[in-house]
Length: 115
Length: 113
Image 1: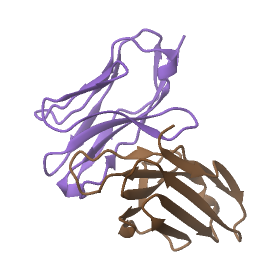
Image 2: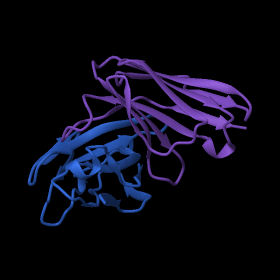
Image 3: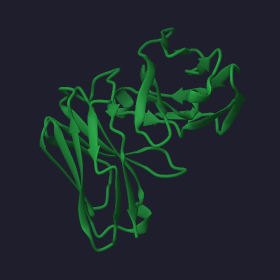
């Protein structure tokens, strides 16, 4: 139990579907993150939210749309995805980003397959 | 820019062997250094960290020492177990990365009984 819970753990969706990934953290943190982990590629930071404001958006295609309604919840809305978007999507949380030595805590990830 | 280089895997060892996974970095400032571990089918967990030169991070029998002179943070364990089989990621954060984590590519470790 890491304190960061992601649902669903596995998702299969067609290219025309709309789905969402959900993340909830119980650690009292005020920053939340989405990462993408693909086979044979380094971990990619997608989005960072601090105090519910997006502070980082690493050139992610608009077919990925994040939402952070409060400091405990983070969503990733998915629409018209491509097969190359199939990956493990990891949510994470921390105390405020921009602090030296800040530790990030990860959820167990959502495995996404786009068919 | 900041970067982290890890030894390529997979690394295959027998149970009770000595483990070293090399990690070197380049950074513009004075980074904090981390090792994360990812067990099969799971997310990443912090294994250990060090925030200044000569600090030693340790956890679960693993150790790594922050060596500024060689810009390294090698992970070591004296006697590995089958349950240590996982992917290990080295990472840094510093002012140059706006304190976001810069990740190595990961090293897969396989321990055979």
